[in-house]
Image (tube, rainbow, N blue to C red; front, side):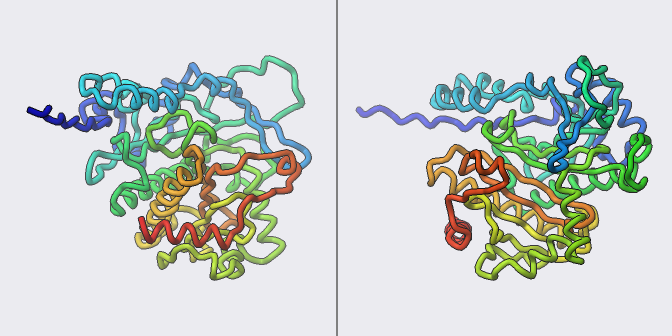
Length: 389
């Protein structure tokens, strides 16, 4: 008699509602008084504060924020992959596999926003290793040229409570909900955070706070935890790209996204979503770089988008990350990518998808990018990838 094959049950790694209930402070951040939110940060995030000062590279305006504590962040990409490799065939090791993710275990900071998805939920909490913080900050340990004081609030949005769910494999309606909650927090921060930034600054009062939204996936590009997430923060420090977008608009009389919508060749279109388009830029710096442009370039922030535009943006994220995750293993690259949101004056609103398919060399540090690919070929491969699944 032959041996009966054994079916190995699939273990769902997730943060469940019971664990969530132990760490939730609010389910809708827009209903939290701003001074209460600041108090929550000051009470909870204390052991891993940034220095609270920024310096500026005088060559190009790059801003440098000093955060030594971030070097102590937990990293689970390697540990989690090793656990899966060793324990996948053994159901008895389910607890070991789940324990590899501290988010699934609920061992994280308290939650300030929750929204149900078709399965599970998306949620937002405080970044335990923030790059900006409302203070008080530690005094500088060494004398340096006078820098700019830095204050702000730094959050993490966990795409889904389920460990294996992210933009690329979630239903479109769920992706839209995640984007809506990101937009809601963005609006809340831009609307309420001005009292936090009563600091000396050469900028106009309405330009004293900036909201930045990014996604890092993979240990090679700054990711630390494998549980899918985005980061969003508000601060008084403007990234260099903000000044570049403003300068572009002053010189060209239009936002950068409006320019690119008009000038980028039609052959580099990947997909049209109605209110948005996914493209490969004609100046592609690295193979498979993509941009998602909102067609109404008068809008500069997520929360300014209507329901149709929010859905289009969510679908653009869904497709771009689905393509990246399909292409990188085919070309022998470890999965790693960044997503950067460009917003505010001079930008319009657009998103940049940057797969880590080529290292940075010396020429790039001089501002000369040597791209080991060609944009028309890359656009064609991405389109085929999305068509064939």
